[in-house]
Image (cartoon, rainbow over the protein chains, first blue to last red):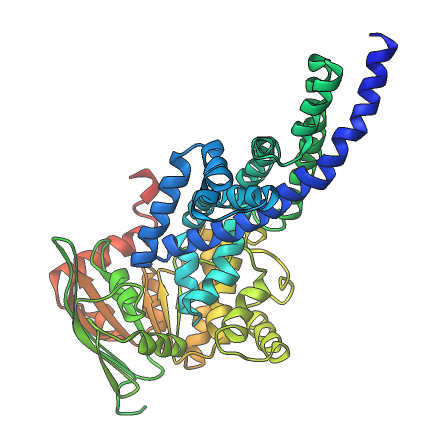
Length: 221
Length: 260
């Protein structure tokens, strides 16, 4: 490895990390937070079996899971301006990632809600609580613990999926790397470098996940 | 004793699909009664008890509770909630809230369901736990407690809400034999203090000693019922006699169910 390449790698490390901190991470955190709100609401509607809304939820999950994330990004960013809806790259990415992740996570949360023993709900009714009180104090806390590992999985996946936002001109880590490659013509070293930065981010999240799981182990197994 | 019944059930019917589980069950309970419901597995005892607290919806029948009449097939949700606040239910497998400590388990029904202020709810919850002998287990989670302790927390949870009647659904059936005694002791004490109880059980000794009234169910019907003393001394129906013989034989150790 010559001095020039090492110089490029060191120089580019900070140039790539910066959009990581200003784009990749905020995009992930904001989108995932909104996705969680969507997921819990959509899962609760299905769990509570609210007729019409439930069908609407199934339709939403069907469409989102059945179409590519990249296509969804293109429809919102390149397609909607055709009907006069023009959204900036970053908010467009937030919208698509939230809605997309919301659909997948809703299924995770629904499965977790159904994994809570029915006796917990019956006991809640028998001490006089109503449905919402039982959900809030008993079922949701237990379900969130069950859902935590698979949701952590989704969060880690999303960090990497945000690289797709480069396609709708969001300057995140991958877009920045492509630009540097175009200037320096060192594709192998630079793409490996950006890969390692993603790996670094995901390592932190993996650590956070095991910390979180330990914290939640106050009861049961 | 008052003349008016506290709880009166007439003609309760329930079917699951093609199977008619309850074929018209009647029951009268006065304040302070301890009623034991006996009968073989599948006779509908548990379903009957669950219908009374609306964990199952009966198809037909009437319920009179505190002088108010309800048509069991169609009780408005608001009345269901109101009735449940006057009653308590103890489950076979405890059903303690897994994410809550013993104390929180007992407090929830007060603080959340009845809006009792935190301080008073906590005092009442502690008193209930003390009463069932768990003063040293306030902050234990269910998985840290033995089956017998969990069931006693469940009884404390029932007591704390000061119900007019407690329904017990085979409260000792899930327990190891050496833990049954501690739960029965608590129930015996409640009976002595005049708590109205409706107990589905297989514990004949307990039923004989504690209950004031017994009903024997088979195939979704009440086959025989009456004052406990007379029921055990001189059961009228042949089926009842056979059942009592089988169960008491097992209790005396003549038949070990595990070796059957």
